[in-house]
Image (spheres, rainbow, N blue to C red):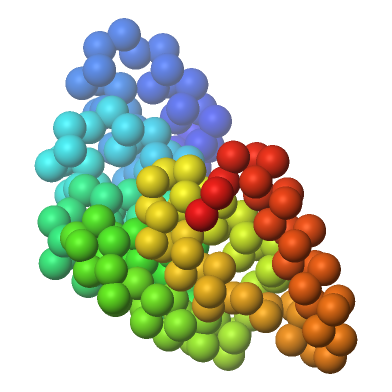
Length: 192
């Protein structure tokens, strides 16, 4: 039983008392510390300060899970959130969403000039390790705009303008692709 995630989760779900659920999940993590689902289940039951403490433990045990790093950054103050996201970029150099969250953080702090510089640096670093498609970047821009991070959305568009089309020499083709993309976004309610 100690190594069965399903049994630990079932036992936690059978508990009626929140404290007992937490205790059960923490015990499970003693045996299965590398399971993201167990960490998330335990963290979501905690108050913010205790959740933050658990998240710090979680990034040690499952350091390659982006959602845990981002959840921790969201609970931290600005300075610590920057540190967390910087460490996440080092640990997971292939995940563009960390850079997008870092840009949103800077935007939320009013550091508008930093946003495009940060994304430019992120794109440069990402290109060393992975190829992010235009569609992935456009999805991030759309999501940023829908979450009221307009500066980040604009910066993503500007910094990735030629991703995927930079090898097309026909300027008319480039223009057609971007107009088609812009029309698609307008239809979905994204106007930035």
